[in-house]
Length: 285
Picture 1: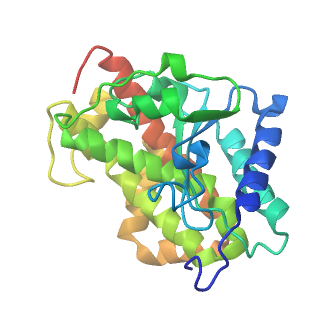
Picture 2: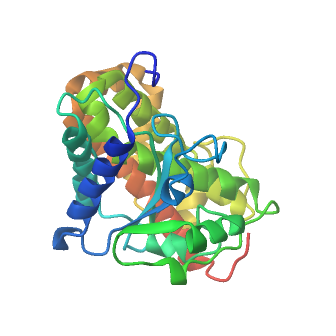
């Protein structure tokens, strides 16, 4: 769907109500430690395109944010599910018919990654945005602990790994909203997450100096390098990819079974990164 064509553009008050709802709920003790930061033109309130042509324009611009879970690399999936429900509730608050959508470009991450120069999804040039153009929607404010050190010289597999993790987490965050709108979109996001998870062993082995040409090869080497990682989700993904009728059956089984596989695949990604980060604590990629 396209804003302004087959769905209405949200107004300034819709954006404000959306984030007021998120702020009120995320500051509840149940979400203790989950932090939401907004940054960029939305925070600067550059609503007048005449005075600031590159600024925020209600109904056109994305609202940029970062959602930080307090865990060490591996997010709490129950809390992630509750946060996904909040996205639905916030859209319901602005429009009970769900005809109005807020273009919310949010990165889902964890505190340990934001404090790890190798896995912070934001490179060093984002630091000024967080320091000077940022609004803390829900406490705590973790910004003083952020570490930035990624640049153009990072390992290609590292950048792909961070990007894939980012998209898999974002897909799960919006999964409940997509379920209210379009099951096909829900499944498209799920498929992208499975594909991302299937790439993790290959990417991490490349980062450790054990390159491989195929995503399902050298699993034995990966298991030897990182024995604490549960490979069951990865093996299940491989089985689904090798038996498409079973993947088709999973689609048709309904969202509960799909979400279970999705959560496990994301946990596999996170556990793999956690194991790498702990084993190579001083390794700069």
